[in-house]
Figure 1 (tube, rainbow, N blue to C red):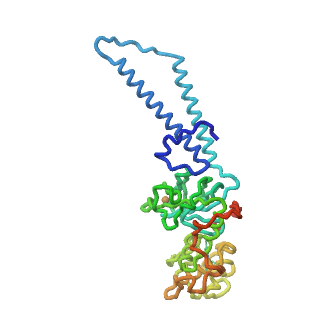
Figure 2 (tube, rainbow, N blue to C red):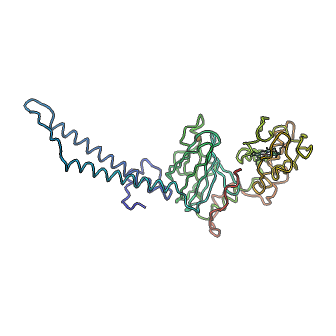
Length: 386
Ligand code: HEC
Ligand SMILES: [Cu+2]
């Protein structure tokens, strides 16, 4: 966009992360343009001040002279020339800002939820990950909201930053250019920041309380074609993992927590604590809160409405997979005093709807890149919002 020589490398190596997005060059260019311009004028003005003092200071034998009142040429020059500079800065700043604020139509959309003190990134197929995985060379749009206080999402290598505000959606977009999925090590968590080697750093840059400095994540840019593979793998559930834990994650990350408490508190919906196996009154008569009733309540909430509650729960038909519904049931079971729960899916005959034993959840770093299935922008809206 701006076709002036790029002198960003003069300082970028010392202060900035290596740029890794399409928009980064413009941001760097303008930043360093303003920086070097300021440095130039700082030295010019300082040098002239010193020179004039040395030449004109009051001393014996020197009579004070009248200063000339006016010099039209000089005054016009020092107004017009800097005028051009600030107009240029405004122009580059404003057009750059518009670029940053306008995601391309075909951008791949990822939902982001910030809360004290972690990030959740949600993909159209229902995968929820604490790190941000994106395809390379494709515009990505983040649709962000906060569950509690003001946060701010910042990815230095991409030169993007945006506040995440409670009660509204904010958006941000970028196109990553340098894949790092091969150097990414699953074992290292997001709290090892300080370099972009093991995934690009992602920070919260709005002080949000005690755990603010640990509100970190990594951005993993998958090279063309491998993002889809990662997404598919991430959707698979490790049979050795705990169904109760998955159910808890779904409660936490998929919106159930807004209406259902797990500590007995009454909310928009009934609490999940100590309800499993109990008899409850509904508009269709007494029901036992068992597997079938829970399943029906999730897929078709209007079928039976609990006394004392309104039929406001959205249906999760098509949004939660069999295994996820099963995990919610296990979680609700685990919240009932004295109820036996399975420690792993293996213990209860595997993950429902998932036959073969998958590799570790989300691990695809060392798979050869097969480009048969080019990454396609998902046209689906985020499936998890109510
Ligand atoms: C907008 C609020 C809201 C959200 C979000 C919500 N629910 Fe509900 N839910 C309700 C209300 C209200 C009821 C009681 C009325 C009814 O039965 O439809 C209910 C009832 C239920 C019941 C029956 C429980 C009982 O004791 O009768 C289950 C199970 C359930 N919800 C599961 C879920 C799951 C799982 C999620 C998240 C994936 C979820 N709900 C999200 C409002 C919500
Ligand atoms: Cu924060």
